[in-house]
Structure formats: structure tokens, C-alpha cells
Length: 127
Image (cartoon, rainbow, N blue to C red; front, top):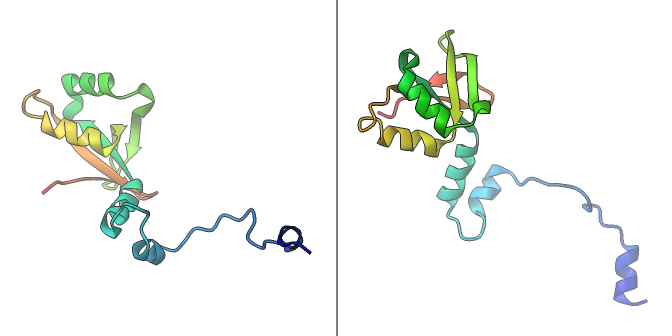
């Protein structure tokens, strides 16, 4: 019997299964071209949702958010960790960075909030 015929007859127990390696495995064997630290940082960042809240519903800051973010990212009456409901703009971390860089130059007035995984939304401090 040829090896090809034998291959067809031998069942593959893992065929069709999606196996996710444990986190320890990912640290030991990061994806090609990435360090373990970079891979771990990327993993952590995936689990965060970032939000911007114009302070006192500042019209100018709100206008900037409207122009830079899709309307579907407007999150009304979001319950936060402190028990208050806020109107927030969902965005990525890069947008938060750009807004922070331009805060003084454009006179933007906002606070940054973050949600880790399915947890509560809390104010984020960069200090």
C-alpha cells in the first residue's frame, strides 16, 4: 500500500478543530517577527474599548468627534463605573492619542474612558 493510500485511511483526530494555545504558550512562542512583549501588549490592547467624552458636552469637541468618528460610534447614556450615565464616543487608542496631542492647539475639552473586556466603563488617567 502506498503512503498516499495509507494517509487517506488514517483518520485525523484534529481535522476541523480550532485549537487556541494557552497564554503561556504564546509567551514562549510568539508569532514570527514579534517579541513576546509585543505579542503580549497586542493581546492586552485587543481587550480594551476606548471612549471620549466631551466635557460639559462641549460643542466644538463634539463637532470634532462627529467629523472624525462614524455616527455608529456615538454611545448615548452609557453607564459608567461611578454610576453616572454619559454620552461617549467609541474610538480606538490611536484616535485617543491624536486627540490628546491636539488638545491644547485645538482647545479640545474631553475626558478619556476605557472598558476592559466586558467590564465597567471607567475614566482613564494617563498620569
